[in-house]
Amino acid sequence: MSLETIVSTLDRDGRPNFAPMGIALEGDHVLLRPFSTALTWRNLQEVEEGVVNFTDNVALFARCAVGPFLPSHHDARKVRAKVLDDACFWKEFVVESKDLDGERGRFSGRVVSEGRRRDFVGFNRARHAVIEATILATRLHLLGRDRVLEEMARLRPLVDKTAGPAEREAFEFLTEHARRWNDAH
Image (tube, rainbow, N blue to C red; front, side, top):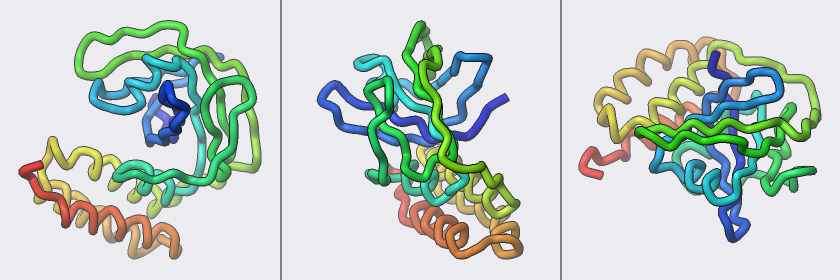
């Protein structure tokens, strides 16, 4: 099962990166599968530590996915990485093994520390739609603008029916990002 999170890593110079990513949890281990072109891949290669942040703030997913965005954060307790200030809970991990074959790597990390700030409220239909739109926005280079906008149009009724202001803003941000996309990138 894939759990939607925001993974934070540092590069060798200590610059943080926050990236939405589906991960798998198995006991005290986390499995991450970043694309070989992603900063997360490079950071996990260089620093081999990170934090899996669980948040119900879908605006963070949208903002972190499609551009340079540095959310409010603080230092992790036991690893060289950052914790989202708006994380419900988090797991700090150290990479124990990696398989770098193929387009997506497999980084297996052992959880070395955990923290909790508040309850995870969960996702209503609008929040799920924003998560799906976030994933689509990160696939523009694969799917093309027209197909992504078509899929986002299918998600829009969920936002229109069940969203609050934050979800509406995040969905509009992603839609506008897709509209501005040039398939020639």
